[in-house]
Amino acid sequence: MKIDLFLVDAAGNRILYLDGRGHPETPESVAYLTLNRYPSLLRDTQADILTVISYQIDGMMTLDFWNPDGSREHLCGNSLRGLAAIDAVRPPFEHADPFAIVVCGTLHYSCRMSSQSCGWIAPRSFPRVVTLVENAEYLVDVGTLHRVLLSDPRASEAEDDDRLYARSAPMPCSVSVVRLLESGRVGMRIVERGVGETRSCGSGALSAFVVLHARSGAGSVIVANESEMIVEFHSGESLVVSLDEERNTYRVRGHASFVESRTLEL
Image 1: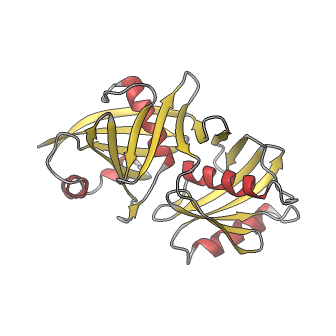
Image 2: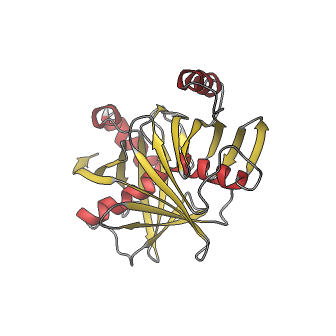
């Protein structure tokens, strides 16, 4: 049995894809067989997440995600964006632009690549819940759970870092601290569940936008731009999140580049 592997750098995150389409095995079996045969694969490729691409029906695909610690992930925004980078270099997908995707059998998204960036497009109506759990701390569900900590303008970066790691240790979700830089631009540092601190996070950027946009009419000190926000990560990477009122969708876009492909013998 052979399986194709694709590696993409998406705003500093290494995404490892296994193309399981055409194989009778389930995504779980594809992941297990591959990692059992190549146990150091994630470490050798410096991958932040494993994404298995499954069957294609009417132009749609199924994506399943695993963290390096072996836990299942519900959604990875950078994995969605990375598909567009693969398709631009080595078109493995039959689709119209943008192509539709089914993620974990429930949530529908699409991806698109322009000359400047790879985009992930999410319907505004998709399941999300913004809950204030403490002062300036929110839980938000954008397909995967995030705890968003809004920085106090008087706090130092060191204080924000201490708060981030104090909250992330016991949390069964990703945790980020968000600091206002200027209108429409925020800084973010994030610790992802099952991974640790990462250089960027697509679903984390969207979570911050959703929280700040929800607060924008509430006299908040931190207010997102009405339709677009730049999220700058501690690593120096950045993503742009926007709201298209006309199409009723969110879009997360930023750099993504194809790194390599190879075929593995299982």
